[in-house]
Amino acid sequence: MKKLVIASLAAMFVLTGCNTFKGLGQDVSSAGSAVSGTAQEVQNKI
Picture 1 (cartoon, rainbow, N blue to C red):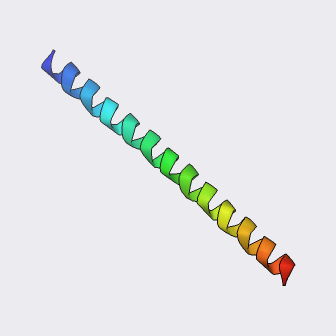
Picture 2 (picture 1 turned 135 degrees about the horizontal axis):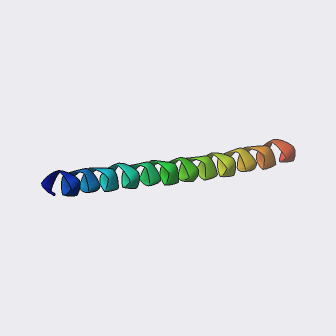
């Protein structure tokens, strides 16, 4: 029983970590898109 509880807790932490890194990747991607869009606008004005 003890091993089952430990395995369940370990799986929970691993899955939570994966979701966190996925969200971080999406945030970084969104920021990169915003910077690219702004740079394109500035280039078009020049």
